[in-house]
Amino acid sequence: MILMMGTDPRGAGGIASVLNAYQQAGLFEPADASLHSVTYVITHQEAPRWRTGFLWATAVGALIMARIRRPVQIVHVHSASRGSFLRKSILLWLARTLGCHTVFHLHGGGFQTFVEQQLGPLGRWWVLETLTHVTLVLALSERWRDYILTLAPTARVEILPNPVAIEPTPIRRPEPGRILFLGRLDPRKGVYDLVTAIAAVNHTMPPGSPELRLVVAGDGDGTALAEFASRAGVGGQLERLGWISPAERSHQLARASLFVLPSHHEGVPMSMLEAMSARVPIIVSSVGGIPDLVTHGVHGLVVPPGDIKALGSALAQLVFDLPLQETLASAARERIRSECATEIVMSRLRSLWQSLDPEAPPIVISLKVPT
Image 1 (cartoon, one colour):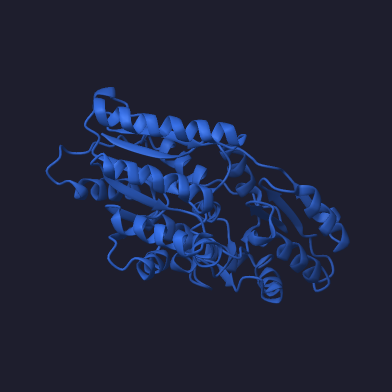
Image 2 (image 1 turned 90 degrees about the horizontal axis):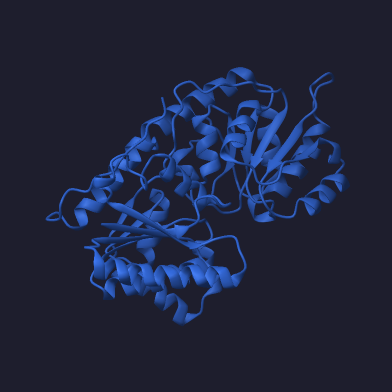
């Protein structure tokens, strides 16, 4: 049996989106209960701290009881930085103590900053201990694998992309000038840079051009963003949706002329992968694992993080160039289909799990594929 642990797939945030993709693919709910090999345990929710502490304590108990009652082969945890890393690293230590194979699955673009700027010597030692002694570390891209190996050269690090459901024929109803941002409304995600860039581009648009409209969906301080947009002179061009469901995300992607995510740091953002799969042209920043998937001028336009002038130039270049949009979007969808499709990622995950204990019975993963 495999025990997988992480945040609530129904919640907000990138890790929840990844886990939701696994859940929708059938990883946790096989059609045949007799083949059930993966059990998921929630360790965190967007809730008061006491609730998070309770969930973590429950996860510890579930791990111990599962090891006593069932032949748990592998404990696989999904982790980001700060408190997420601390909670998951302790679970991994306990799992190793109980004799389980352990998998540390790293998400979140803030891990490098966390290690290099937010931890002291003891904390960095604990990161090294964790990465070195788990059975397997999973990274989202080549750049993240290389970074982990600079920290822990003897660790076994493998790449596992985030899974994306590939709809057979994406339905597109793009509205001219409609720019979609999916992510937390935080300066580190570049959304304030995007507002500033749109204000600059407004002055360069040819007469008669459709007005640019920025649609933002995500948690965070929407009021502060709206006030910033008003001061920049684009308050009337901003539409705030709050955190939206997967179904509403698909609807918004279908309406978008462009998807823009000018983050200052990232892992490999699920919102970007979903936009690429949905054939929405993208403008993204050259951070984290993004350059491993997006080649500038081939799959989208890539700009340096925090470079508002470059971001404005990319917007002006792409927003009304329909042939270029079509070229980039087609190449991006093919890239996702060939590397990140759910069935490809699930097959690789199964192979990686099996490699931890080749003598164990075959690991069965049920898979639901969109039709």
